[in-house]
Figure (spheres, rainbow, N blue to C red):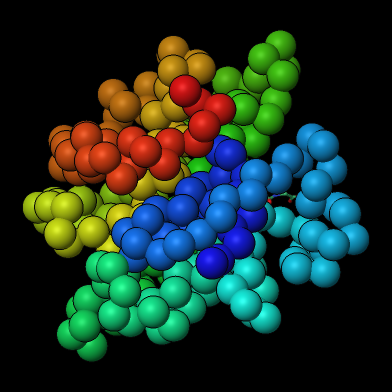
Length: 213
Ligand SMILES: N[C@@H](CCC(=O)N[C@@H](CS)C(=O)NCC(=O)O)C(=O)O
């Protein structure tokens, strides 16, 4: 049984939850709260000295950094459930490159937008800063256009979808919070249909951050 330390609303924790489900592994989800200080306790810092979620503990092995967790699950349990990465080396490399691009370029851009909106009190919202951050996210998403244009079917789900979807779900949620943000109006038709196709799949619905429901 894997212990999975989960923070509701974290795209990184969501990515691990999706992978655990996809691989059909037995796990116990342990909810941690930033507000309650769970990430700063001694036992938690012993698992992840950076004090961030997610973490998994599998036997004697405690692992943090969500991308490394997904790699671990695939390597450790190659024949359990569905694969997280394609078997073909070339395709696998493209998947890893996409995941790296998501983590290194898209995630920081989306964080800037989250900081300017979610994590700033409404009365202090700076419209110029928000538009700038939104433009940064949209520019980044353009780089993934050929990826979004590929047909998405449940049987081709992989770590790439599990890394991309939670970040985009957060962006769509921002649109609900700030009606004039215009994220959904500004994205490409390929991205819009990619997102709604995945959003209909039960794996994405059943792992939605509990506090969103
Ligand atoms: N690169 C890390 C990022 C993890 C991360 O930033 N988690 C956030 C939640 S989205 C967190 O735990 N923040 C708490 C803090 O920084 O104190 C990963 O992929 O696991």
